[in-house]
Amino acid sequence: MEATPTRQPALESRPWRWPVLRAREALALLGFGVAVGLWLGSTVWLTMRADGSTVPWTRPFLWELTGALAAFPLLPMVQTAILNAPSPRASGRSRGAAWGRFLGIHLGTWLLYTSLHILLMVGSRNLLYALLGWGSYDYGHLGFRVPMEAQKDLIVYVLAYAGLTVYAAWKERQENALREARLEGQLKAAQLRTLMGQLNPHFLFNALNTISSVMYEDLAKTDRLLSDLGLLLRESLERGTGPTWPLADERKHTERFLALMQARFGERLRVRWELEPGLEPLPVPRFALQLLVENALKHNQEQLTGLEVRLRAWSEGGALLLEVEDTGRGLARPSLATHGAGLGLTGLRQALELLHGPEGHLELGAGPEGGARVRIRVPVTRARSEEALP
Image (cartoon, rainbow, N blue to C red; front, side):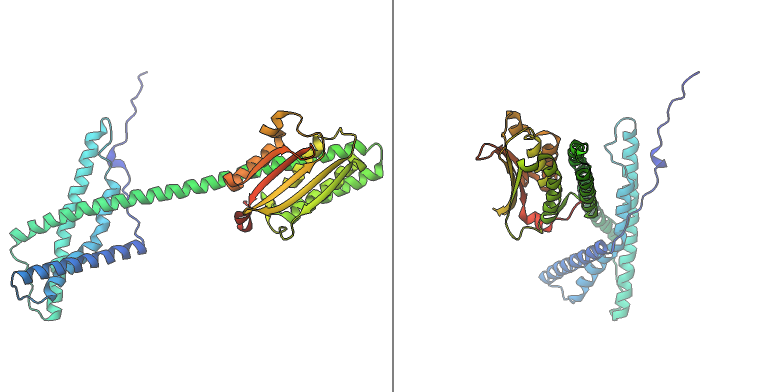
């Protein structure tokens, strides 16, 4: 069986495209036409005065205004030709056809444009002359006037083609940039939802491990912890699912989490809060403090002596700073200081970058007493007005 060659669709089979006319753009073109008419009218009048002509000044202004305004309703023809003439840069066997279609459409449009322009221009002048009582309008010898107008219209057509093409290209770039910005925003929202979805189960896993460690020793305590965990999850869900919430909510969530962890660490765990007043309404990444506390407990769970966790929040240099410091064993592994401590801090770093770019970051280092200290920075100016992404 012989293969049937694939036929390329003919250029003429493309659907005809029509311009979309918008009121604002049409009014701008109309204003431009009036300005051009007045400018040309003054030029013609000054030329006639320089030649000693006694023709009233109203005549050249009427001639040029009617010439410019008669071209206004014909500009959509040029736009239609631009939309339907293919690029003459088409490659391969379609190059000749593309050039033929390009020149054919624009040549035909120019001939139609100049014919209609002359008819509208002469007709409007005859009408206005009659209404103003100026007698009959003398257009001159058609054998000379028509070629002269055709040459002028060819220049206008080329300028209109260039202007409309540049405007269309600029508008397309603007629309593409807007579309890319929207897609980037949607991607950022999706990435943040994914990160938040990772951080929440991360804390839940550790909370359940804590409950599991006491369930065979104290059933009443286990029941209380499960109740606290259910309340904690319900409150976090009732406050929405966005990537940020107020610092006050973050503190409440972290305090409930610490109450769960207290069952595991007992008297070995001491917590101290140092929050600057007035910062409670500011948005912070969800589970930020809770995750930093969880990280401190995770790396000090085998410590037999007392462990103190200090949580601080203050404003400095146009930023909101959140810090969690512990008195544990510190950064035993160098990689923790450079790459973070697992999924939790890595996800928080990524969330800060998505929310605030380079202005939001996480620092991991050693505390003054040998323990670990983690600090995150959130720009206050953006945090005050920022809304949670969907």
